[in-house]
Length: 149
Image (cartoon, rainbow, N blue to C red):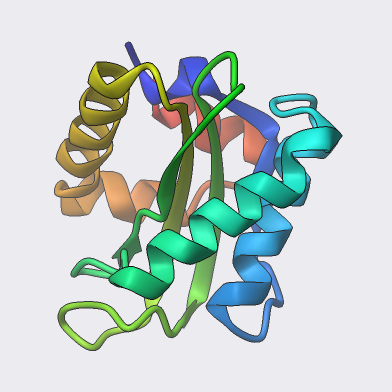
């Protein structure tokens, strides 16, 4: 299943002004609440799970990509949020470069296969430099979501 099925344009942050990755993670979780992808009652648990995962090992990959993710009890479906950061943000990435594309994934704990499949699709799509460039050049949130279709 395409990431677009789990991504709402209301959960796409274009040019966030977050000062660090922790602030960005909080913004992404709040965006998921605002667009109805996760209930407000799960926001604190979602943020805590993502932060715990990030503290155990950074999800900053290479080539300006970070994919913070967590599995949650009580979540009914996969929820995704996206931040496009042309200026970059330090994510303690493997290559030491700032993250410019951040995909946050929240997956129901009981759906381990969906978790692996979604992470695999995100990594595959983001390995394409043309796709990354087009994503960073998306004129609006709807266009960014459409690229994932």
